[in-house]
Length: 113
Image (tube, rainbow, N blue to C red; front, side):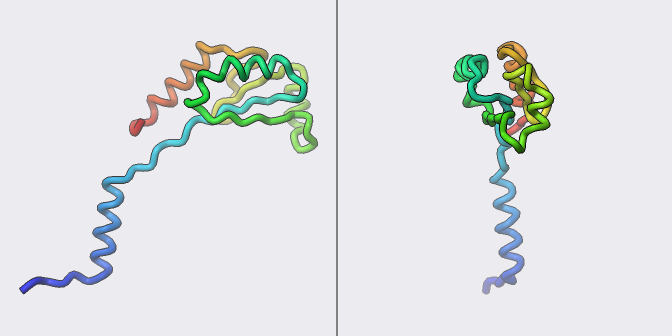
C-alpha cells in the first residue's frame, strides 16, 4: 500500500525543487550616457563602446529635454558623461581601461556568470 501526500506538501516540494535548480542571473550593468543632439563626441564615444555592448545596457539621456534640466545644468559643458549603475564613471571621452576595470569588477561580483 502506498501513502498519499497532501496537495500542499507536494506544491511545497515542487517549489523547493525549482529553487534548487533555478538561480536568477544578475542583470547587466547600466551604462548611462548623458548626451544631446548633435554631439559629435558622443557619437565617437558610442563607436568606441561598440565592442563592449554585450557587457552592459546602454541608456542615453538627452539633457536638452525639459524633464532633464537638472542634468543639463550639471553637464551642459561636459558631455559626453557616463554613469555606471548610477555612479559617475567618466566624461569627455571613453576611458577604455577604466571601463574595463569597473565592468570586470562587477562581473566578478556575479557568482552565476
